Length: 241
Ligand SMILES: [Zn+2]
Image (cartoon, rainbow, N blue to C red; front, side):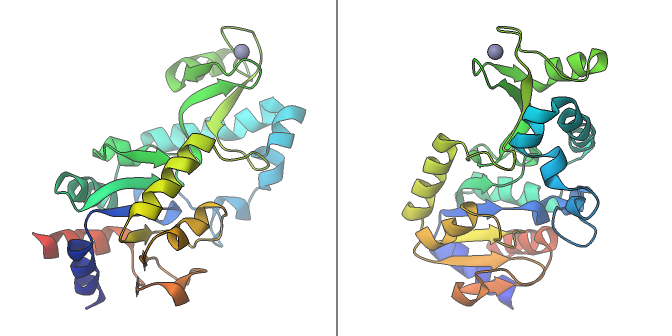
């Protein structure tokens, strides 16, 4: 029932802006962060994924990200990514704003993707702002624990937003603008705990949520579907066909 209601909202208020979080990628075998089986249940993010840790011990941070990058590059888009790409092609979705760094939306065919937490497709130099593609970074990591900037020799940092860093300004500005212009923001697979991204739905006229389990904004949503991302979005796509 609620899936049909969501399809109606998406049809009436098209094009929507979709905001995705880790729950969209768990069906691709990518663990989330905050659940009992999530990544941060085993390791302390401030030891391996903070800007302070990177400045103190970049080799340790790269050790963690090397493994993450290998896992994410081996993952495949799932039914949720595929459905969102198709919804965009059919004019129901304007853009996807994602907290995910795995690039699976782009790989599934979504063309307008705003990556507000960065991505694994590149690394960057904190000294001269050089951006180095992942392939070259991974080659360097076979030889040394910390990849070096080809322009200035400084340590390259993973192209993802680390704890203690501000979000990329241009991406956040675009995401905020998209949310403000939308008649509907559809939140998928995010418990809306990480700010400032969690505040984006509040910028829109209205928002709906697809997430297994409660989120911080359930009480303010037009509609909540408590179910997995893949099955729900595939059913929405069916209902709109
Ligand atoms: Zn540099």
